[in-house]
Length: 505
Ligand code: GDG
Image 1 (cartoon, rainbow, N blue to C red):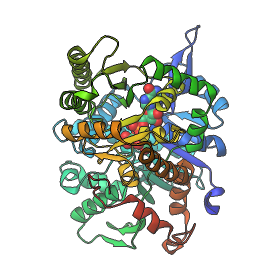
Image 2: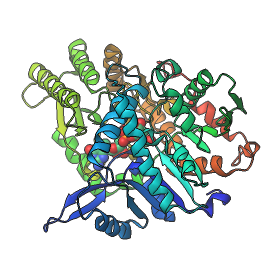
Image 3: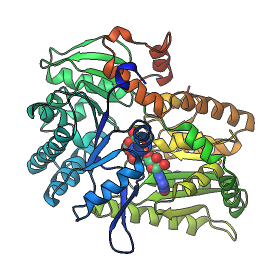
């Protein structure tokens, strides 16, 4: 931990508290740790050092405070609920966040719904988060705000008279300027983002897109310094901006995968599938994840390469999400229809090409699948990072698994030299990658997986937190690279070109 950061308490602010809520036998609310990238990323860190996590608990029922209190005792850090009304949730979460920012930042422009009332609700909800944070945080605390739901928090904290240092990390991509600038409230959003002391992105590409948007709105904007962390001066502000590809708790995943129960689970899975070549996908139900294209690619593979029939199985886990939105419900039905069609067309006695699961699996079960799979199909159309890709490789202790990865996942910037890279829109290309995976010799499988695992081991979640805090607290930009000679240069090289090449070279 950076020495200046070590003294600071953390105050994390995110849209959702890192819990999922259920009821006990007496009807009381009980919390358990939720699924999702951000929780996976920060819970171990907060447990280690203590701190406060503020967020919306997902319900306004009575008993939320007691539930947070008892969860806090177990978790080892304070959970603090931010109360949102139903109207807030509608306009801020379902509206501005999910109908404007989520699609647009992932470069999907058609589903955007630019309603002015959504913007008003976004401002109102961000103010509630800022007010709760101002109450809880001490001046010397470091406030770390997460993700696209909360871009206005720093500017509102300032309006409330708070002078703490505030950092922001965007977990989803930042779109190219031509797309970002379509937002009617683009100037207000950029102005608010510039109020952060540090703005972190997943990749250099996202960071460059942000700089380009700022320069288009503020033509006199000046970037100082090169590399992973630089200063951008615009609109009278000079925040640091940097690229910090998020990692995972590599050792925890590798250790969990090494447990005898997991090995047995993986053996059982393999036996149930007759030791066929197992393809695996696990995605939240979302149009950015490219599941229909992946299924289509499987269909093409079975059609074009008859030798694969009876030889491969795709295990596809789909985690329920945003089911109240008609578009998501329709997508689920479309995926089920495609699964039915592929299985109806190609199944033979004792073999069906797709094994489909629509539920949130317990983590242990997910790890069993990671262990059993010969090849992970991680083919999002656009993704900030994609932790499934990293978790699969971390769990692959045999070292023979194959990672098939979308060029448009943030993870591609780090892993494109060693993963089998695909354009997720190119169904024929994914089909060919599946065939290549089946044919790939063990030596190549091992070489690729070893390289991937060594990157993930080194640049894990603890590295990520440390790198972000170093950028937040180092007095001078010249302090970089602080850890070792050529550190940032090596990272830049690892991230490859701004646009990864399909050949993966
Ligand atoms: C954002 C960005 C970025 C999946 N299926 C199950 C399950 N999972 C867990 C995985 C993984 C997480 O969910 C999904 O990871 P993502 O990377 O897709 O994260 P998002 O939540 O979409 O969030 C993303 C991330 O932030 C981090 O910065 O990578 O690009 O969109 O951890 O393990 N977990 C369980 N059962 C499942 O069936 N228990």
